[in-house]
Image (cartoon, rainbow, N blue to C red):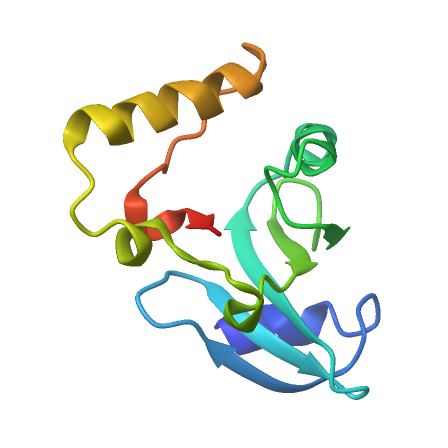
Amino acid sequence: MVNLVLASFQPILPRFVKVDRLPGTGYVYLCKDDSGALSVVKIVLGPYPTDLHRELEAKDLAPNLLSSPQLFPGGYTMIHTAYLDPSEGWELLSSAHGNLDESSFSSAIETFQSCLGGKAVHGDLRPNNILCR
């Protein structure tokens, strides 16, 4: 089904020559386009808050949003972002701080949520869903 969804966006996005599902993720893919550039695609159901993403991007709290086309109103959205490359120091918080105690993690989450300015609540903040360097 996901390949069908990805194929539906081909007229909008660069042609991907390789698409690999990222281990341990839902519908998150590492994509390579015909120029060799890497990016990440995540498929979600419903609209995506691009304005909020752009605000977080401006604070260096989210990767560059390349596009977020919607298949049809109320349908799937493809979130297409820059790839945060491990060779540039990016790693999962769970890998970087495997022994992170609960209070330190809670403090990091509270800090991030405060950056959202009360506009939203991130519903899936876990150490294996956060990249840091």
